[in-house]
Image (cartoon, rainbow, N blue to C red):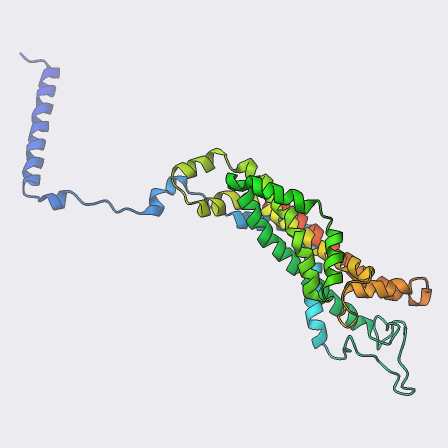
Length: 340
């Protein structure tokens, strides 16, 4: 006699065999194409397990706008920069180089204090100081941006080659030692003295050695991160040098680059003021903050004419300090270590 347990096991095995036989009969008439299908390959789906919605520039912008003080200063700076270009288009504006005469006496309106007609007054030959200040701001900012862009392009290129290509390290180190020992003031004075004073001359003189500081910072940063594990792995996988530099190295250098560029703009404006102060700057027919400050310095001891120094100095201070604050804040925001 079979026990109840043995009967259940036997019935289960019999049912299983019948089920298998039934399924086999069903599959016998089905082709291989119906049984199997190729799995679709999708690169995005394949890497979905390592996917992240992190965006470097998005995180940088979010971090920057968290700094309310820097945002306020940036808006002030943008307002000033925008106004320098729309000011000539406004009604009732005087030409910055026109000598204004009294319609009754035909005498030049010299050293007229600020009033409704001349918002910032006139200078010692009757030119409108309001128009000359904004025209001078345009000129100085043009010089500052041009020098900063040249320093950035040349400095980044030289710095990357200096830091990444070991064979060029000796050459660039010696070149740096030679150029860095020549004071930039001497170069500015010599170039401004030899060549015809102009905007192009000042930009050329400031850019001759201005890129050295940028190249040195870039080189030092690349030496720190050049041989990290992810860069070694990229080189072992055959990643092209161009892609490795753009994707693995430059994001870590954005903060340094932005800070150096932000400091280059006020630095170039300050150099223009200095060269004008020693009499080698732009001609008076080309308004600039350097010319205006130099002219105001000559009358600063006269209380009634001191406005000729105060107004251009205030504009210069706002522009230079704003560039420094915004550049420093953006430099901190661009550092990947500060991203959350």
